[in-house]
Length: 260
Image (cartoon, rainbow, N blue to C red):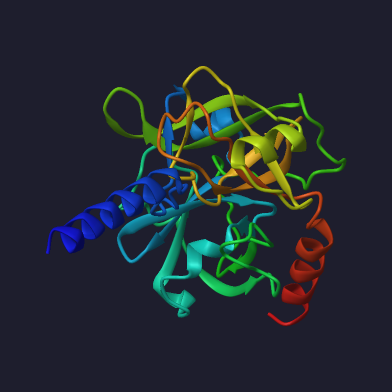
């Protein structure tokens, strides 16, 4: 009996140690930890809120008046994309009362066919909206025209948390890090289709700012796909490279325009 008790105790301790070193896969929640408040107009008008019914689940980016780019994992809750809606041109969250010229529905959705949730592969989706946006506060971003490099300064935005819970748009600057440093921090070999950012004074993405834009020189260069816990100063934030997937984005939009 004593041997059995000792065995069970040792087994539980081993499990606890193993669990402690596993990186957490956070719940989707588009929040920024830190940064500064900014109006949607000053940001550039490209950031959108994506809702499943009345719950904000992700951010996204307008790349024209009618098309958005976001993360594929934003749509894993249900395959029925008619249950999602998009809000653009708003600085504050509009969970229950979006204005008529802000709210839109998804007409078509395409998730990258090679998307693999646990391997940082092709976490990207393109959606066409039912009505083109004409609201003055709404604008869009061009796709990344060059391959980003380590040391590049980028900006990320989202609706986030600072010292207390906030529903106002926030933005912060982040530096890209080299792939070797990213591999070391993540303790795995990261694929070539990702960008990593880290070490920005305790300000981090929070639960991924899922689907939101990483912007370099006024271009959409990354889509937020993964982060560790809010305020984690060790693990990097991971983005899908828009430059890597630009052909998929362009071809998808061209196909959607053909078959409206």
